[in-house]
Amino acid sequence: MLGAFLRDVIALNDEAAFIHIVDSMFNQHAKWLKVTAQLPWRRDIASLNYLLSSHVWQQDHNGFTHQDRGFLDHVVNKKADIVRVYLPPDSNCLLSVADHCLRSRHYVNVVVAGKRAMPQWLNMDAAVVHCTEGIGIWEWAGNDRGVEPDVVLACCGDTPTLEVLAAVSILREHLPDLKIRAVNVVDLMRLQSASEHPHGLSDRDYDTLFTTDKHIIFAFHGYPGIKVDLGRSARLLAAHQ
Image (cartoon, rainbow, N blue to C red; front, side, top):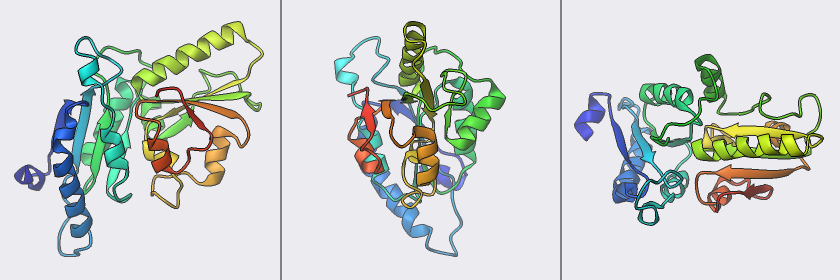
């Protein structure tokens, strides 16, 4: 594997339930990246890219034995200057994220994207903009344009996105006066504070997206405890437990 790094290309694909087999390898490589980043004479190498393409929310068989979202918990507690986690909501966003990750250097990038056919929410240009921002309000999905929302429905992950947009559609049909804001998260680290992670949001930007006093329902691919690690758990109510 080291030879592949030195040739500037490395990507691993696995099922989410079995990726824990390489937990210790991930740990050691993250430590190695941290130390070598402090050596001015050592050039940055290609990033290690994990693509988890068979995940808990889309199981055709062996569902119980294949249910494990814990690798993300394992990743996010590593040094902020080393790890990145991306959960693209559709295939165009996956292409944008993959392009970024394969061009990046000296990181461990974890990308979660199911291999089942899913709806395409964004065209390619919109996907590139959205993934560059890492998080954003999907105005075309909600109905709070120009006003304060009554509730914020946020999502992170392809299946959670599908479920949240379905919920938004149902709510808009049956409760048309309810002002709903739809927020999609691609870069999980955007939920951290800017003081904790280079991709993190400032308090002002976070409040602009999620408001300061409205209820937030957050449909998330991983375990709810990960929000504690991200440091902004008080008002994110997990829809996926």
